[in-house]
Length: 212
Image 1 (tube, one colour):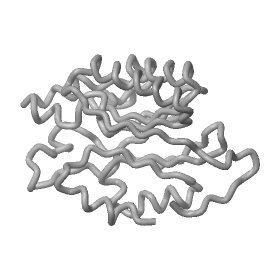
Image 2 (image 1 turned 45 degrees about the vertical axis):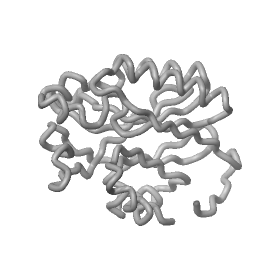
Image 3 (image 1 turned 180 degrees about the vertical axis):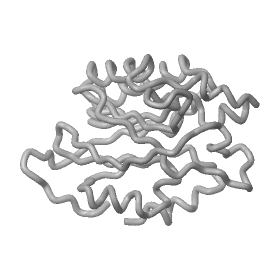
Image 4 (image 1 turned 30 degrees about the vertical axis):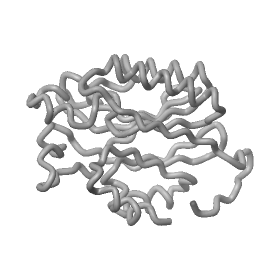
């Protein structure tokens, strides 16, 4: 990690917990219980931010595995919404920031869904990042994000925590498109959090993507 220059009222450290959660496919209730459990566990270990994987609320490939395109449309929720609100309440109760991947139902355009990262914390929902670069890999037939119905996001925000840290969030393939993290760095991100459900076969690519 590169050097971070402290600003006024910026804590010198940020303690981050990372959860490698195995999602139960298309079972939001079961996955939400796991998320809430690990939020409490991370806070008990003095973490200030806890990060969950891409689409962990439903499982990344639930649309493909259930052979039912409508599945993600049925599972997607608005933000704020039932799951986002439960996670936010847990963040408030445990005084911790949370980043978690989920399918988001647009409230602006009926029928539009996004592969999104909810960023919430002690003060409530901080923001939502919507994946911009959707993945369609010919060699991986179960990875067809546009076929599953996702629409790309259009914004590259950076948010500030109460600790004074600027946090940028992106999702998987976005990290490999260098303009995304570059823009986040230009906007002042101290930390860039990338959540991913990438296949094991592509793990070596992360050594290239994530070089400082």
